[in-house]
Length: 83
Image (cartoon, rainbow, N blue to C red; front, side, top):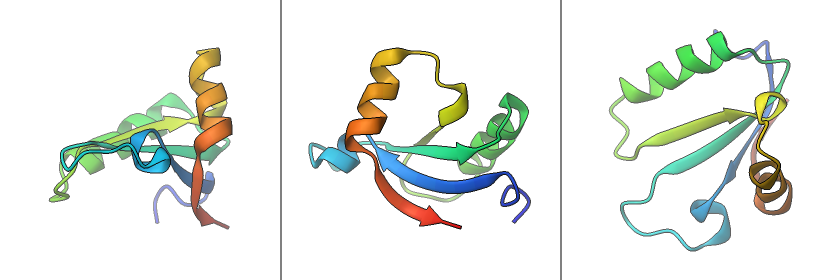
């Protein structure tokens, strides 16, 4: 809830979205909205401190500067949450 105002939607990308994942693969999430690095860092810390059985990596779409990563997200991301 504390991150919800800034997050408009969440999608999964990477191997979990393409179907090429292994049992040990992490979960790559991309968040859409007006997000800043501080919010992403706090959310990342929450995931790291959780009891989830998988590592979770998160990226804010508006902060992604690497064109190939942005292209991968655009092509393969699968929506999980939409306001």
